[in-house]
Image 1: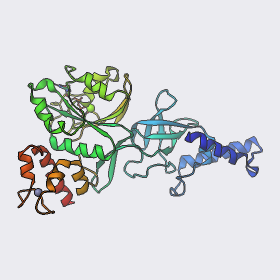
Image 2 (image 1 turned 90 degrees about the vertical axis):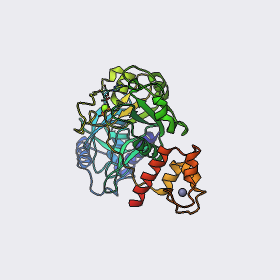
Image 3 (image 1 turned 30 degrees about the vertical axis):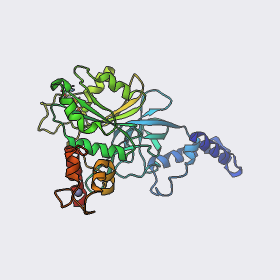
Image 4 (image 1 turned 90 degrees about the horizontal axis):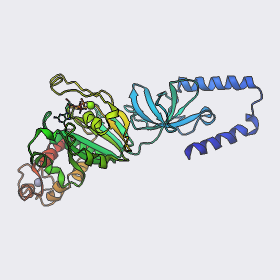
Length: 360
Ligand SMILES: Nc1nc2c(ncn2[C@@H]2O[C@H](COP(=O)(O)OP(=O)(O)OP(=O)(O)O)[C@@H](O)[C@H]2O)c(=O)[nH]1
Ligand SMILES: [Mg+2]
Ligand SMILES: [Zn+2]
């Protein structure tokens, strides 16, 4: 729709009186200088953004979705089909002005498909959803955009389950307008009942919690039903089996995986860059490199209360409004923990995150 509109605007400009071109040679020169201008990029970025340039209007502008990134270059899956093409970000590219993440996997983009690759990105469209991670210095790192489901992958054995990390992901996922899904992998390595025990704190939070095994295939069918026809991102610690699960879901993806013991202590990640893959059963997924920790971007106490509603509810009965829920006089939280309204693991996450917010 958008594209057609722009083209029409462009045509009327081109057909206007003083715009008519007379010689074919002029055309060539014009074309050359226009292209040159776009390739060089412009320094006056603030002037460029809202209006499409004439080259865009008249040139062959196509749409697509970013499947992987390499520096300022992005591989884009054309909307019209075919193999991904290489595109490059320029200063002239209009987009969501996030300095640390000007173009990310999942971004919907437009590019000028003339001559040869790399094609110049003309626009990165506004992001419908975003998975964001905090960076030192307060910058936000957008991991991926426009996905529906944030799948947190955890492991029941090695590496051990980290509830604090899961809670951080949950907050980031909900802040970015994604729907959370929790996958507990490697259940082939634990006894019956252990998966239930690990997932218990999340069961009452009203999102899918799926115990699976990439090795035995247990739980994989249920996961397919959650993923079908949606776009998801798989995130979690390194070695939990994100890529292994994807290979189990779609063996033709042949994503590289690696044993955990071969990298423990070395800080090695097998998947080194986020990549978007299509599922044969409909839908798509972004496989991401594992993390060791996950900082939230600009968390606030108010946001935290929103993501821990059970704690906020109990806190209304605390005697003092600045109660820290750490053995303070008149605190109502311990009683809520005692009757099972607040789970100890959730309270622990809340207190750790609140400390971080207070420490700035
Ligand atoms: N026992 C068992 N091992 C598994 C399972 N899933 C994966 N693994 C093993 O765990 C190791 C790590 O798997 P990967 O798929 O590479 O993990 P990853 O989460 O993609 O790791 P990064 O790419 O570094 O983030 C491999 O040796 C897998 O064979 C499972 O369900 N059970
Ligand atoms: Mg991987
Ligand atoms: Zn309290």
